[in-house]
Image (cartoon, rainbow, N blue to C red; front, side, top):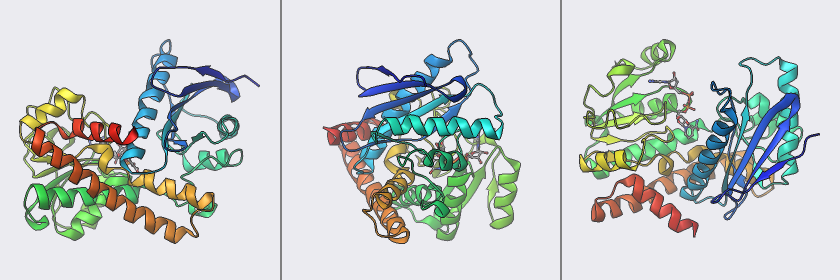
Length: 360
Ligand code: NAD
């Protein structure tokens, strides 16, 4: 069995690297355990640049683990931030190889004795986490049939919906029935969000690269308007809600945006602070992503509490997660926009400053 290599990187508690089953390389970065165990998903990713793949995986695991610390802090959860990346050498793995790989990853997580808690992420499946759970108890995001709380996306959607209502009523001074909203991405979060917005009476535009996702939405709800993916910045809505990709607002489109507010679940929506400040200077409201998309993390945290006996049953654990999500989203937005009004700093910058203060 190969040994764990430990890296000390300034700003991170530790990075562990291990060659697991089948010569796959797995990275686990612990950004912080100051507030609790470092929780974050396991990404299984194929890097096209073969020579630089280890460097790219390290960059990803560092960036993503740090983001988890910020999100956990924004969610007021007693958790730190961590993340795992396994470099995928092939696109398709035979089921028996995949099983051995995730058993071996489970052993790696177990060796860290609870400092890191893993979960599903890009490229991994609930089925993979079931296999991981055979080797370690430090895994969350399991299906209900395995004692977990199931898909976290509906709770993420509730948090984002809470934020949309807050921005509509408190900052745009409008009501849902006279507010237009463009939903980009109708996946796990976007489709749940669509249902809440529809029931609340918003005027909804939808966009997705998947014709199937569009067709499903148009069949299920009346009066939706379709916007082709490359035209989302050509129209003007009160709210643009990104629920698909990262860096959707960047230096190439920031001057073009006509929407009044940006409120969605996608991680890392804004390319950098400069772009974020430009939005603010143009009078476009931005609800910082991790301050409002913390519902999924909150749910998996309560699944962890259930696992360690701090919650009595699934139903109450889920209900508490939903209430805490709404409460924390509102608290974050109140705090952020109070400072934004006084300083005219971008909400993205203010959110980071608030969270960094809470981490002290
Ligand atoms: P998903 O993969 O289920 O859905 C993404 C959707 O976006 C798909 O329908 C896809 O076809 C669509 N899409 C992709 N590219 C697009 C484009 N260019 N234009 C329009 N649509 C496009 O993902 P999800 O779980 O719904 O997550 C959505 C976003 O929210 C991601 O950025 C994710 O990181 C973030 N997020 C998700 C959760 C969660 O609980 N699932 C929690 C926090 C953050």
